[in-house]
Amino acid sequence: MTREFRKDIRGRGASSNVTNRYDSLKYEATEEEFDNYIDADEKPLLKTEVLKDSSRTIITENKSPDVGFRFSVNAYRGCEHGCAYCYARPTHEYLGYSPGLDFESKIFVKEEAPKLLREALMKKSWQPEVINMSGITDCYQPLERQKELTRGCLQVLLDFKNPVSMITKNALILRDLDIFKEMAKYDGILIFLSVTSLDADLARTLEPRTSHPMARLKAIETLAKEGIPVGVNVAPCIPGLTDHEMPMILKAASEAGASFAGYVPLRLPSSVLPIFEEWLEVHRPLKKQKVLNSVRDIRGGKLNDPNFGSRMRGEGARADQMAQMFALYTRKYNLNVKEFELSAAHFQRPGDQLQFKLD
Image 1 (cartoon, rainbow, N blue to C red):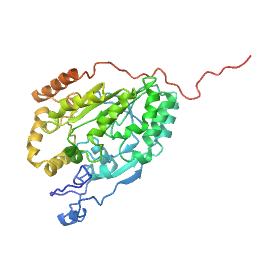
Image 2 (cartoon, one colour):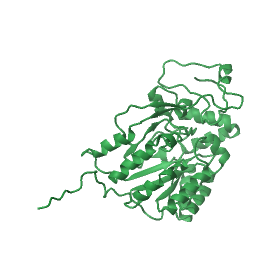
Image 3 (spheres, one colour):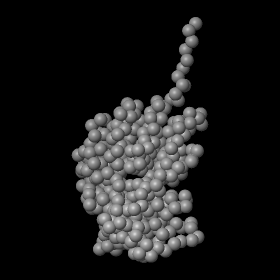
Image 4 (cartoon, rainbow, N blue to C red):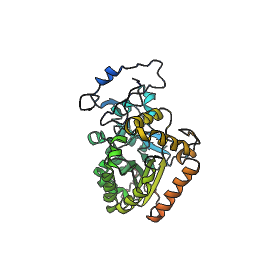
């Protein structure tokens, strides 16, 4: 469904189902039809639909040179968090759906994810290496509370002592603290909590079903107190909207106990761009042109830069200022001082222990 009019849909980041780039046909809804889509209280009639993903493999190899991991595991396709800026939205187009409301309301679930992961790690072809979780969609999105597929995968990784890095916007991660404490004993876990903004009102519309920013900071505090290596990711850092918050986020995370920090400027690949533009029009109309012009400042005059390297850091004076600000405040708040490396030295397949025979 595509349309020229926009409305806020409570609890959703997108305001429409933008056209799938690969569809040869499209349907233009009338404003009256769209009005019927929302009740009087602006609560979405569209409920989350859980769909079966019948994939037979679970470990994905990443070949992008500017992403900090090679292998990842994603038990879900689509994400209920509904972040308006999510770079993963275009992946739903490959499944025949819109990157808009469909992405956050039609969630594909790999019910056999833990089983598939165990089978993959049992193969002699698997050489122990760090696996990242939340490389695409958030492994602790709300549906995980019910499905527990991320916990199941973590238990498998613990059984094999295969190291894992994680990044999430959801304080639900604390549910699995018992597993993390065991993993930390062999340098097998590293966690980042993403914090885009400390402004709760902004976060409520920009990333509607994520945890409150203070809850994420509390999660950092709890993990740190339990000896879990934890950091903050200021991502995305949105020029003209949230970039001024970077010092405050780094300070708050450091005070909570974070040891590490990272940041990524806003990326608007392919069909993410119209969704984010629509979000600005609905929620921050007076700032729309300022934000878009600020994005152009770090993207060579364009709204997106697909090139490896520069896409993750931006270019130009404004991007340089962002990098300098990050370097200044990480030093000020003692972040990234200690080096930490995940270890695969303890990897062991269950049943591979030496068998001793009595003479």
